Image 1 (cartoon, helix red, strand yellow):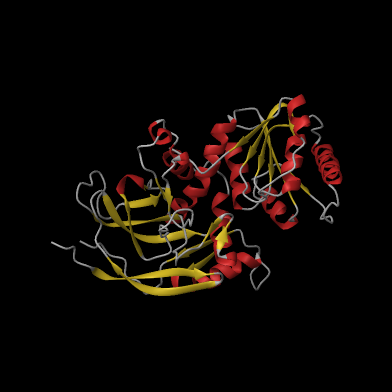
Image 2 (cartoon, rainbow, N blue to C red; image 1 turned 180 degrees about the vertical axis):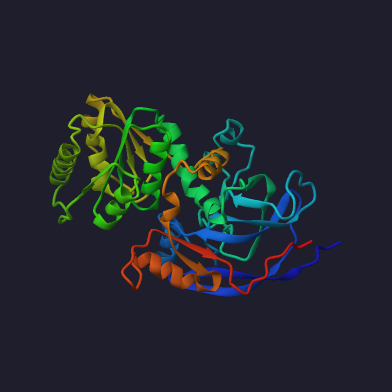
Length: 385
């Protein structure tokens, strides 16, 4: 017997560069092992913005219409056959990556590196897997994490970017008493500062070119001190670029009173000059954690890293982080992270949300950090049985 379609689903669909359309699609009941979720909050991130602005994110180009969004939370409205421990009405955070559970990475617990991973809102695989900018979505039940009572839907959406930093901090083995420097104070960088503090870092400082964001970090107790990098013309030679990076970070370290560097440097910009600086920012035996996705090929001062035994590590998404992320958000120990959400839009205004995120300031001149898209006000969210 064929499944019976449910009422139509309002969906925000990217058809190409700058081409987002709100459409109605057929809504099907969840299949075996899946649950249906009414999506009530989706945070927009940098990868979403790249798809919107350029029709691609790095090497991954749009090949067919795609629903963006992967930082999300909502309410379970239906469960498919075989689903246990998840009931209609449960508030959940949505973990967006669907792993195969068969490859060597999945069986070893490193499912973020799954060779068959399908990730909501990513064009890496084809057919693409639609993301969370829709009123309802069906998703594997084991990737829906119940929200603690103290967590809002906004908190549930923040659990995804927070997971990125929890995974990175585990790889860097951030521990009590260490000093941490963060490059970039967008949403990811601000979360990096917050996670470092939650791990007991004795000092957390940040570097950026945006003074307003740096002021936000210090005024809200997210960073202990900051340094605003002056904007300079692009270096003409590789030697000049490396020399500038070393000089720039030495100026910052002098201001911080940390001439020997920091135990851990989180690089959250992906910009080549910052990656170069991060090597010099780490102390002898320190670590550089590469989180930002930007420059594809980077010139590095490798001799400086090798001679001082600075470890340069990569970090990709996350694995087994959602329970810790939600517990942290519920505990209130992350300080002012909820202030990262600065603007909200309804689903049918998704295009406006992306345009605002691209500008970085609203019409009143207020800074944009994290934009959340929710359902339309006239959407009736009810259990679908």
